[in-house]
Image 1: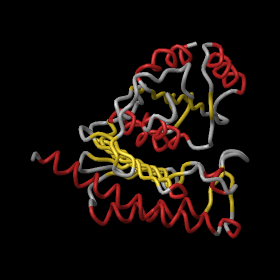
Image 2 (image 1 turned 90 degrees about the vertical axis):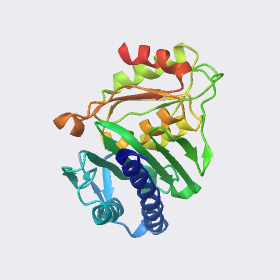
Image 3 (image 1 turned 30 degrees about the horizontal axis):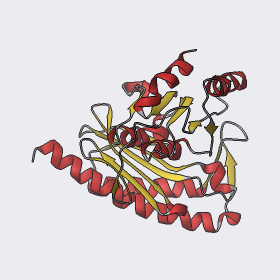
Image 4 (image 1 turned 45 degrees about the vertical axis):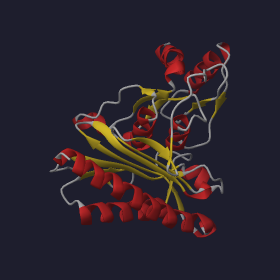
Length: 265
């Protein structure tokens, strides 16, 4: 086994164990969410709670204790540069709005980048007891069962996830949905882009598109989709680009051209 394979295996194992631990902490907060103080960030739809912050702290501490030279980018507490070539990219609770409103569509999203590419992607969905796990060259799984995309699924016979936020003009969101419906597709939005990407890897959705997302929202999902046999739009990760929002698109190969066409118009 090469040094890189050894390093990848170690990080994959840690990502899975810390995702389970972080998910348990987040679920505890979810079950007592009426006591949480909710704050807004950019706007009234962009919310955060002590749960988000403390779950990220837990993940940061576990990674730093085992792999102190690894970098870390989290939604709540920013960036620590790596000295190892590996960077963890984490959203402690993706889907904070569903979380605080008592809906189950939120998750813990943990990715590891190497050479600018996601080589580990783990998404834990505590309310559903689901652990999506993937690593480069090792495939993707849901609760230990291997995921492989079905080539019979298309835009027309499947559902597509669509994401939106206040970075995107309402008119643009309307155009995207109209274009999707116009080619015989249908759409869903559940409040968590990371979770909808996991659903693409699991074949529940045929694709996912959002015009503006951050790395912590999509890197784990991208790894999952790729390892399940899907395609995704390149996401810039060099220097400052890693911290900025970019379009996110991932799908079954059967739907990729249709979604890229919608993205391009």
